[in-house]
Length: 220
Ligand SMILES: C[S@@+](CC[C@H](N)C(=O)[O-])C[C@H]1O[C@@H](n2cnc3c(N)ncnc32)[C@H](O)[C@@H]1O
Image 1 (cartoon, rainbow, N blue to C red):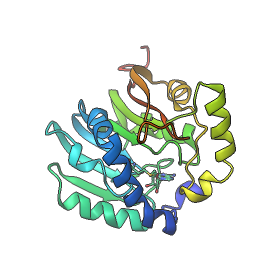
Image 2 (cartoon, protein in one colour):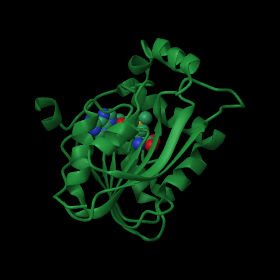
Image 3 (tube, rainbow, N blue to C red):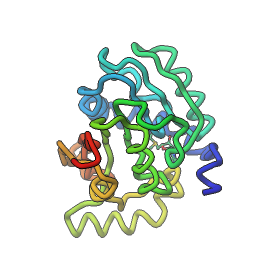
């Protein structure tokens, strides 16, 4: 709880290298993934763990406003810069996904992109996403996930001994979809794929891009 109240998370080394990692990933396909993730977004959006703001330029014109939450100061400063140069209004707020600085039922969409792998408390984050969404609102997610193939899953477990230390707390072994369902969302669409780099599988290749909906009424 104390951790959730503290808005800052410091990963200075990761924050320095992440823009380069992201540029490499985008050159190999992540740019299209971001467009796919955000294609149907409309209205007011909260983006959790927005990082350097790599999604901002891909929001479609149907999006009225983005509130981007980022706890890491260096990444938040980069997000401020990205926000100044994007087609929709973006407001950057310090904060954690587990305690969003956003009122109840106030937004149409929540965006989680390459972030449920890093957040300390995923159930609390998804409960917060459900709290801030209006009834019938949408959770848009793009995540790398645990492989369903035993050999690759084993490789992920081994690499994951050091991966979080190098990757700002990122984990290779998470499976966000059951957590999304457990938080009361209905997954309406989920495309599973291998994000290959130069035709090769990496430990973060298994990915999902999807949309989940919050119930329109408590009875639904
Ligand atoms: C791999 S980066 C992804 C950044 C961005 N979402 C993107 O798509 O490029 C993971 C992000 O999660 C953020 N993060 C880590 N823990 C968090 C938390 N508890 N609440 C919100 N964001 C968090 C990190 O600061 C970082 O910006």
